[in-house]
Structure formats: structure tokens, C-alpha cells
Length: 115
Length: 117
Image (tube, rainbow over all chains, first blue to last red):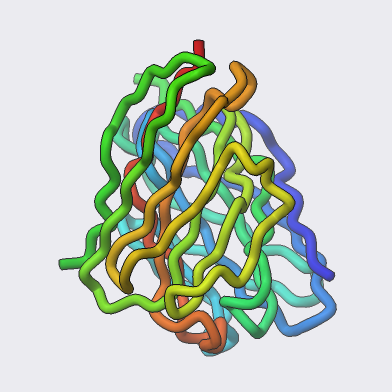
């Protein structure tokens, strides 16, 4: 069994300041973790993925996330926010058998960028 | 080509209509998925096709009928829908339905925004 909790439903930051979106997970297995981004009325785009190779994962558009097993966390960060980062972000966890298990989505964090 | 293409982008239908949503991918992926997403909510899995066979049905009402005519195409047939079925319907694909999570990831289409009147 697995679950994921996104700790903030809404985050607002000023353009050019750091972004932190928080995610905690629970899993019976060694998990695979993803961050997806969804712009309004669009599909989901993969930002990055953790699969035990390296605890610090770099993704697209300057985002990165660090897997911390001791804290069961997988927080998403970006050093400097851009207006185009405004979107909904989903943290996702799955077990070892990708196709035969559902992905478990967090409830999402809406990121607003203040000009 | 790394795209999942969904048509139509928008659909308005009455409760007595029959319509179909279409999804296509040419990445050679052998797993295809339908998700339903209500506003301000995460996507919810509806169906999974593995090697063109239905492998997961998340207790979806029979007014939704999936079809996988070939490895590149996935349809969702709609009949006698209710207003509460209004949502964004997302199609996704992944390479190997039995692959390890180490190698797999979902590619999503842009979705069909469905309104049922």
C-alpha cells in the first residue's frame, strides 16, 4: 500500500524567488516517485522521477527534488521562480510493478507566481 | 514522436447522446490508460489496457465503454452520461505494462474537456 501527501494546497511566491513544494510519501516498497506539472486545461507533463539511482533528481525547467528516506519526503524546489511556472503540481508514488499498480496521486499544489 | 494525441479537445453532449473520445500514440507503447479529472482534483484512473487487452477497470459505470482497436489507438465510447460526468478526460501511455517502475513513466495527452448538459 502507498500514499502521498502534498502538504500545501496553494503556494504563492514572487517572481525570481525560490520555490518549495512539499511532498511526503508512505510505501510498503522501495518507491518510485514522480512530480508532474499541469498547466490550465492541459495534460500532465513529467518534471522529474526518482527511482533509487540518486537521491537528488534534476528535472526540466530548472526543477529538482531530493529523496529523503529518513523523512519520507520528496520535496520539489527551484532556485528562481518564473511566471511560466504558475500551474498545478502533483506528487505521485508507485510501487515496483508500474503497469499492474495504480499510480497514487497527491491532491495537488497550485503554484501562483506574483509579478 | 513523443506525443499522446487526444481528440476532440472539447465536447458538449446531451444526456441522450452517444459520442466517442479518441487517443493515439505512435511511441510503440503497449499500455494505455484513461483517467478522469474533476476540477481542482487529481486524476482518477478509469481503465488500463495492456497489450490491447483490458487489464484494469476501476469499477467504472457501463455508460463508459473503452475500446483498444490496435496498439496505437484507444477509444472511450460515451452513452447516456450524467451531468456529474463532466470532467477533463485524460489519456496516457507507457512503454511496458509489466515493466519495472525504474524504467517506466506515463506520457499524458492534453485531454478532452467534456461537458454533459
